[in-house]
Image (tube, rainbow, N blue to C red; front, side, top):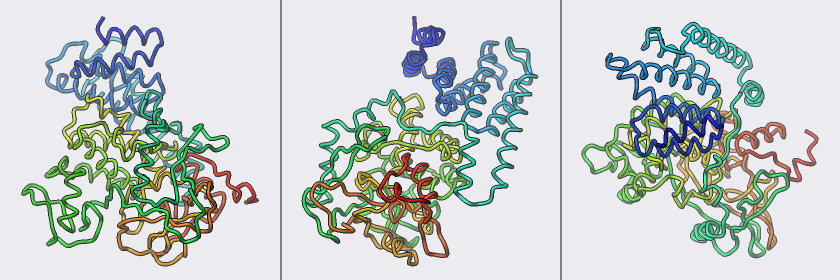
Length: 503
């Protein structure tokens, strides 16, 4: 039996994970076979990963539609197109994309022209399309009537969202290797490069946590208040499209400043040094590429989510330049992926559109197993719960993989001490200058052996703060803070402040 036949047998036997593996092997051998993509899409639906089914079903349709439109097709092609579009619509609906599910069926109606197809009930599909549109309308009206209070919106989205929160996929071997001795030793080397001998990385545990052990930072000696624990430069800096800012460090610059020397590239840098660093890290993979389609998707998104997509873009560019899987980038392998269901409800399907365009732009075949959709979504989910500093006033973002090792406490013994973080902590006007590095300093005396904590909601992740004029403030309310931590980082804070709070 070939891989497709083996996958079909496993599917019939309800061994869906085995079916996924067989279809994936088949796709690597014959990626032009739409049956493999469509069948794997149905398998992902059965495995309850509809977000992955969306990509596979859409690709199956992209292989079939030209045949149908040209009139050079067999009945089996038309039948498979109907199955694939239906699977795409079903997957989109399971992702709460009811309007997109209706659009998928409408496209099928337009291309197939209701031609007789064995096993296809066009009237039933029309009713399903109407049901999707009705559900989309009801959800939209409900959310539009709730106002702009984030807490209320998130609470309501949580009630209507069918899509679950996501971490790592069960077949992700790399995630299982995150906390091995070998991985821990490498992370310690990264930490040593930017810190003194006051702290070390260690595996720690928290009561009731989903992971038995996680990374944490431990004091190796008694540390006095004000001592700088580390000073980290961002691995990646990004800014909103169209801004005159250095592509590597986000410094404001003018159109006359240093630009990429390649004739077909219009990217701007502030110096030869920044260009050289970007060239070594990621720029060779994207030099001269037309980013307009990616930027169009980013501009449709909310500021912080759009910035996250641009960070993913540069991570994929790094991987393409190194000719490796993005999950094998040493600097970010230790990051833990998480995305709350309410975040997916707002941004998930836009991220899938971004993935499809990203693969085209980087000229990566969609069947390259190193860059599959589940790998892209894992990278996407590694960003939000980790140190992606988003500046809501300048629409810039920066990824700090090592600062991500610090765990949270609402009353921490350390804090970020760059100028922007200090302004937030003091409630002062927000500075517009870019952050070139971020320091973490002891907020009070720390004893040897103590775990070092920072506060994720104050001066660490600006996206969970509110902007009033040009001053950024924390939410203040324990109720709102808990919600922010649960929906952004995936945990319910049980520090002494939260346990003793009566709010």
